[in-house]
Image (cartoon, rainbow, N blue to C red; front, top):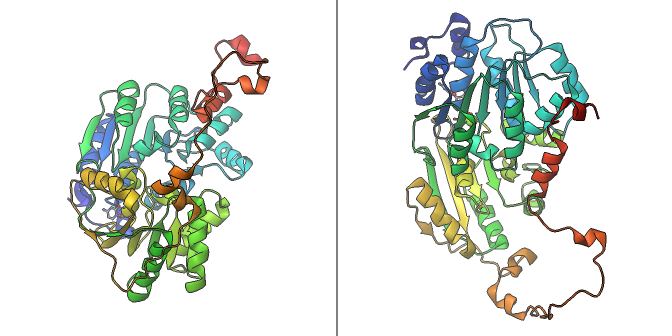
Length: 443
Ligand code: CDP
Ligand code: MG
């Protein structure tokens, strides 16, 4: 369907025209009338198929000019990079409109953001933590929010965002439209919907967990970090078309280690991004990868979700993720907007189960290939790889068994605490406890 066949106005059509788009994607076409009708909606469509404009367009179509200070549209996303990206997409579409758009997220000066919010906003894009902090300062008021979008909704329930999300929904006016989007769904989402939303209409372009056809996937059995490194170097040296390669690893330590290993072979062409890097550094890495300065970007899952980076040629799952959904989102950084992409997974013995789960989720089987014979298999293991060797577990000294009896003395206070789990959640719950009465509020 052409954009001109949707009930859009000239200012939006002109902006779309400037971007060179003619055809609406299936999710854009299907979501449009539902969002315009004011119903709650859950939109499921594959990665890179235009879910952002699927909500941006109808929201802007319905937004009337206003001078009021408090935002009327709130979009929640899981990462800071996504705040910038989504706010940018709103700006592209408002080239010919007078709409105030703001993005807020943690890790940067809250006062600058306070000042921006104070100036007045129509549309606010935010990560949950900073949103709550701003609303606690009293500068940000959410009483006028009419539309709530939760992008990457399943992830928003993953990262320990759940209590923040619920707290935000408590502050928001009850009468509002709720829109949720992702390429994958989990049971948590169903639960959230049942509690907080009113009969949302499900708009599903593809079953949850379907990857797009234009990502060519392959997988190789690779035993350990150092052999993976040999293989990755082999691939990079053999294939000049690997010109924008996103390499996902399991944690920050491995990310830094791999970065220092690759940096020597490909000086100035390798970047690394993870949550311990400064926010400036994170934005710079994304920018340099985007503009082609970097050939390789090593990343943890901080950029696995939602990031729309043009022409990523390859996604390497150097380490497999724990959740199969994460695999779908990682490989979804390539093959966007109908471009072709290649995804290569490195599978260790320990990953076999995870690899099976991924194939089940995709409902697709992928051959596990042997390493090319020219790739040197390394015997060297990282300390973290040694720990999981079953043979080594045997040499661990067995825990001494102590007969349990009455204690000699009272436990010290600090040892009395029992582990209730979910410490982060409890900390948040305490921090953001809602005042029960006016009296309590004044304390
Ligand atoms: O959210 P999702 O992963 O579905 O995709 P996105 O981040 O919205 O990215 C979609 C990409 O396709 C962006 O680069 C858009 O500029 C582009 N695009 C679109 O969204 N809609 C069209 N009709 C044509 C292209
Ligand atoms: Mg998206």
